[in-house]
Each structure stands twice: as C-alpha cells, then as structure tokens.
Amino acid sequence: MGHGPQITSAFDKTTNAYDYTRCFKYISAEMSDADYTIANLEVTLAGPPFSGYPQFSSPDELAVGCKNAGVDIFVTANNHSCDRGGSGITRTVEVLDSLNIIHTGTYKDSLERKANNPLIIEHDCFRIAILNYTYGTNGIPFPAPTIVNLIDKELIAKDMAIAKSKNADKIIVVTHWGNEYESNAGTWQINMGQYIFDQGADIIIGAHPHVLQKMIWEKQTDVSGKERLIAYSLGNYISNQRDRKKDGGAMIKLTLRKENGKTSIKEAGHILTWVYTPIEDGAKKYY
Image 1 (tube, one colour):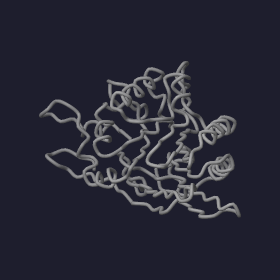
Image 2 (tube, rainbow, N blue to C red):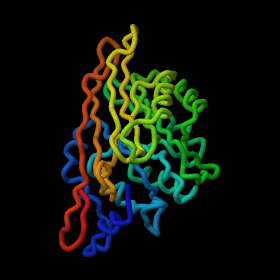
Image 3 (tube, rainbow, N blue to C red):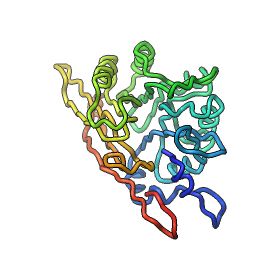
Image 4 (tube, rainbow, N blue to C red):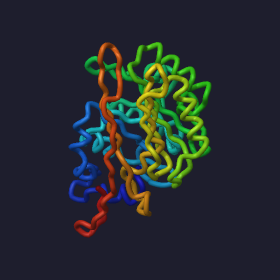
C-alpha cells in the first residue's frame, strides 16, 4: 500500500525524486530468490497529485522499487483499483507495461483482458495460470472500456474453464476478499474459496483483511490425489498501519515439482514480515 506518510517518506530532497528502493532492503534477497514473486499492488499509478487513503495514487517509483527488489508479477484487482477512475486503471496498466512487469486483474479494455486473463506463466516444464479477483471497488464503478475482475461465480467459472483448456499445470487464484481486521476467515470467504476450488483451482491466495488469517494445505483431498492450498489473508506487507496485527503479515513460498507429467506442491511455507519504521535523518522511514 501507499499511505500518505509513505509517499512523503519516499521523497528524496537531495535528488528531488521519489525512491522506494530502501523499503525492501531487508527482504529483497528472499524476493529475488524465487523464480516468480507475485505481489498485490493496492494503489493506482495514476500520476500526480499523489495521495494515500482513501483514494490512492502512488508515484511510479513504487513499482520501480518493487521490481528492483524482485517482484515479477503484480495482481491489481482490489478495492482501490478504481480510486482514480478509468484513467487511473489505464495509466496503472501502461506504467507496468513500460516497466516490463507482468500483471493481471485490471485491464484497459476487453482485448487486453482476453490476452492476460488468465495470465499464463511458462517456465522450464511448468505452465501456471494466474487469475485475480476483488469483492468490489469501494462503490466506484469502472467505466468502459476499462475492466476490473470482480468475484462473481459465473465469471470465475467461465475463466476457470479457459484456464483448464490451456492445459495449466496449476491454477492460482488471488482473491481480494473478507472483512477488514478480522483474524478469522468469514463464512462467505470459506464458501467462496470452496466454490473456486470446485471450479478447478489448486491454490488460492487472499488479501484485504490487513491481518493474517489461516493457511491450509490439504495434500490430498480425495482419491484422485487432488491437493489444495489456501491462504485466506497474508496481512500487510508494507503500509502505514501500525496497530497490533496490522503492522505486518507474511510471504507465502511455494515450490512446485513435476514428475511423470504430474505437477504437485513439493514444499509450502511462510515467512513472517513486519514493517520497521525508524526515524532516520529526522524523518520516518519504512522498511
């Protein structure tokens, strides 16, 4: 996220420019180590005037800092996707394209959605599909031709069928859902997660509550050997929220294995994170 104090902190008066590189210095080794690091971009890159809550627009340098730290893919469908209207959606997509950062979840138009939904990642012998949806956009509609993927059963079923038709080894669905600041997943989250699994998803990674919620790895759910992994909420990665449980979160790390044409999760684990905010040179910094 990019709250107002984070934007102020990122401004370097000596260069008269924004720089977010320092924010990830303590964790960039972990971020860079993965073949693909996926992050939830919960701001728009809509250009100035920059602002935090309630309608976010962060400097483009935030995306640059994330990329330099190891982020390869952004999911962009969340409740702040429409904070700056259709132009904000479009500019965010264009900035990420200019930086060669792969992304999915919001789109300039239906043609782009068709090209990047599901997002297919091919690496070595693996073919992974990534889908991203949000429960809503804070009541701000997305104007045509822009599109934000919303959590809708009919839409998800249709997209999942496409993902399966593309012979994906694993289907990962990133969901923006749940009640803010609640440590337990709600009934709607649990039921929707089950529905998404029933449509063919293998892995579900959740965001939005701003606090950690449970992670479950079912290594075999039935006689077919189907495995499922869900993290209902990874909490906050970096933000200005400092209350207990809101001042950190977790990264989830998955290692996939392919044997005899079958892909499975070899290892799964999490790395707890915390936002460190020291005063340096008379100003608050974010790590």
